[in-house]
Length: 192
Length: 192
DNA sequence: GCATTTTCTAAACAAATGTTATCGTTTTTA
DNA sequence: TAAAAACGATAACATTTGTTTAGAAAATGC
Image 1: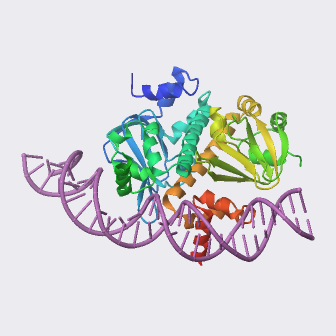
Image 2: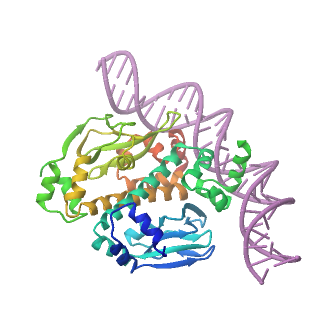
Image 3: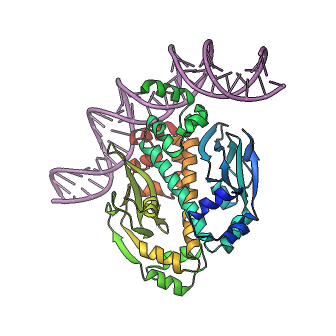
């Protein structure tokens, strides 16, 4: 059980990969500890890392042109997280990624990712599966925004982010749901 | 210039592929003409086809549990379209795909896709790039829903779907924007 | 452990958006 | 070509959601 074991287990559920290949890949990786509220990935810089979360909780923040922050995503243990969109396009990031809890991540620099695509037997497949995973997540997200009320989204958030109510403050959850914290407070009261 | 030329050109922008590989792939494909309003891909059935649009315009419809229809996506010439999420997961489709104009598509059955992953030199990479493309599109979509007003989304829709105002009725555009057609009418008047 | 900050609730009011109904125009179809 | 259906605009009204302000409780930092 080393610092890359969790990532290894997750990757092995997606593709066939040898122990040697894992070792070669992790040669390009490192582990980073992030304290609460610390920024892992800042806005306006080209994101050159993908993160795998060993322990802890992160959120992805969108700052709009009025300067308002929107929490548009949470990421927890055993998940990959990045500003994929900007990482892929190699353009300055539109998101800030910040720790909600003290968090430990594996850092996969672009070199690791590119090395993986080229040299892992099923490297491209791994990339495809991770992209597909996020595609499915985002598709679901859009579906919810169109077809569910904020209250229904509130009731269902635990399915996607287990125990999030005990880990993230309510105003971040409200933001994720697309409403103000005051309104979420009101919905909870009406509920009963 | 045959019926697969357009798709060939699009694929060649994504990966390296030989003429022979294209020919082998299209052996699994067929061309289908769809009349206006016709359903290409029905809800509740496992989607086993991906489509490439030669000419015409399609829309993707989400029917919520109250029976309301939401137009959540448009697709036009030179684009791949499918209920990817359900195609990947092999679960019954949650979307209906319908033609807005008379449309001609190339049909890629699951067999073609799987054959491509296995046998094309860069098959997995093609899958990854298409998935990444949709991931970026959906990411942008979510960003817009969070950070822009309906009016701003209306003003910007032409960037994503060129000339859509002349090709799709306004109530479908309103639905895509997440508002009622009456409200869109009001916004257009206020505008000036 | 105390002071400070953050978080959550609450309520009154304002703004945005949905609902319903109507009507004239355009498009479709028989 | 005539009838029917779909489309888009409009207005009055209803509902949802945001804004502002205030205060109490909880978490945090020194």
